[in-house]
Image (cartoon, rainbow, N blue to C red; front, side, top):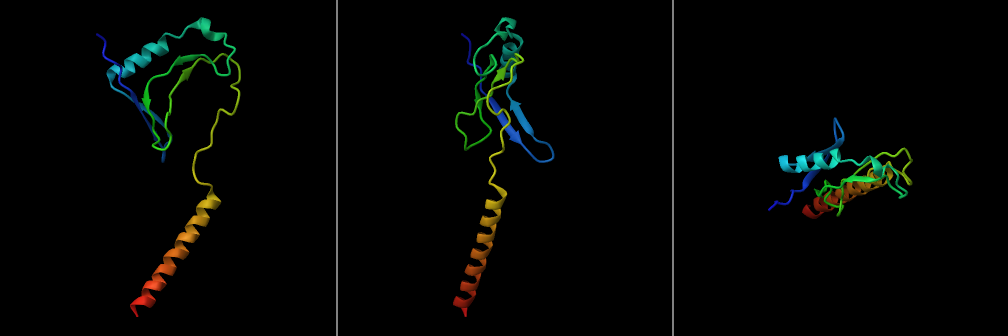
Length: 120
């Protein structure tokens, strides 16, 4: 009886270097390698929106606020991918971050002034 292949762990990191780390035990990485090595050259002719799927391992995504995060591997068939392939990060826009920071500073100063006046 075959035991199920454990999920791969995905870890997104940023800082000095940026990237996506795929972490798994020996069995999970070997199973992924077998899927990638079994690419079928006849699947190059695809009429779907995305290139042909090669592997879709089970994963635990790197983001706690994004459910159902998937890691998939596709075969390049020489056709451009429909839609925008490069996504922007989901950070707060800089102007909104600045506005929130200003409001936080004003709020902290107001609370400090109220505490000082209440203590006197």
